[in-house]
Length: 344
Image (cartoon, rainbow, N blue to C red; front, side):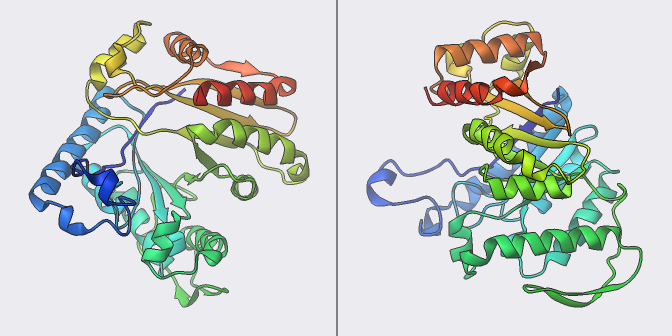
């Protein structure tokens, strides 16, 4: 069981009348509401928090990408990852992930991740995301082409990392006469790949075919597991060693150390400090599929509305730090239980 600290880097200084005056914090929210002085302080604070997570012993520290939004101040997660290569020593630096579907030049992503891998001494995990709807509108890209652009960009980047010789690429969305990236990543054949998504069957199938790890928000975890199990027999002819689903959730950093120590001791953190995010990993080998359910992390300033059974499940599994394996026959029942608990 491994623990990662995921950061959205939001802009929290919304006006008191935000709900009455604005429809969204993304795309159409005027950037006149952004205070550069506060923004500079936020970047310093957020990098400090990620550095602190490394010092506490988290296995990974994760950044992601969003555009034209107060929801997340990381239009370039690779810049944040670059800063973290020099400020951290042990944790995996997880870019979860680059929105390659809206990029006009996927090779730039391949080059930057290769640089990060070298700068970090091989500690980079590379995530690829399709991006949220507003980001396609914000970049004037037809969202109908999202899946095709993402799939092609993904395959191009992987080949750019692994091909030992110059090659050309002529696809439906991207054309390159010369592909011969310098430098190449230190991890071979390439850095680990994570595909965050909303739990769609298409994304799960894509990851299964390419032996990648799919990351789904915790509210979608049960749906992903159930859907994956139903469709898994149709993928049986594709021989891959392990297909995984992981759940992700945002964590605030305030009181993280105190909550972490309380959790390790088996105690329940104070309610006002408790942010429970459930995770479940699904391992599908050729002969079985087990849900590995438990903790993700405690910390933060606001509690999510979880039912009492789910809170007990989270606390017990966190205190025990042990995998709760469920048989394939109970797989969908477990998914229904998780979903019921997560939604109250």
